[in-house]
Amino acid sequence: MKENYTRTAVALHWIVAALIAMALILGWYMTDMATSPAKMRVYDWHKWIGITVLALFFVRALWRMRHPAPAPVPMPPWQRFASHAVHGLLYVLLVVQPLTGWLFSNAAGHSIVYLGLVPLPDLLAKNPPLAHNLKELHEACAWVLVVIVGLHILAALKHHYVDHDDTLQRMLRWRAG
Image 1 (tube, rainbow, N blue to C red):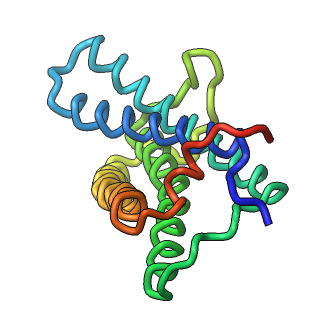
Image 2 (spheres, rainbow, N blue to C red):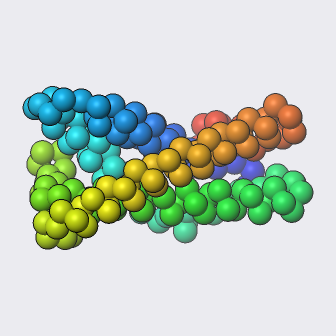
Image 3 (cartoon, rainbow, N blue to C red):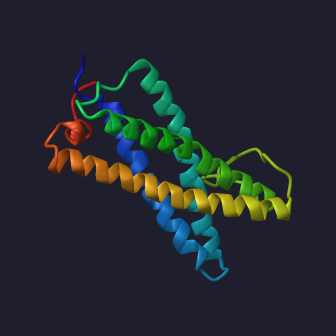
């Protein structure tokens, strides 16, 4: 049984982590901006990052099917359950968060042109009442994402500094594969 993640898995993990951080920061920053061309550019970047995260979710899923994760380090059953629950919620949110943003944009009457080059299909027609509900859902999911990412980080630090096991190191090693 292998002990480490592949180089691709490590790269995808950290790229998605950085993109999520940027999307959250832009999301909170842009809502307080005055309406302007600069605000629209920040919204575009936020949307593009979200679509990239959604696409990378599928890349990660395909990679994982062909390259299983290493066995977890020994831990109590409650920690294993918590680990599976947090990872499961993270994966769900990697799909739900970008999709609710995409649906919200469409319901608000805004199409998404990925990187200003690739028009994405409108998944919904303009519908202001639905847009309001999707915006609320998108914002609520952002808070859930912050909590789940925070738990994920705290668990990794606990494994490293309290348990002194290899959990965090396996996602930091840059090995061949």
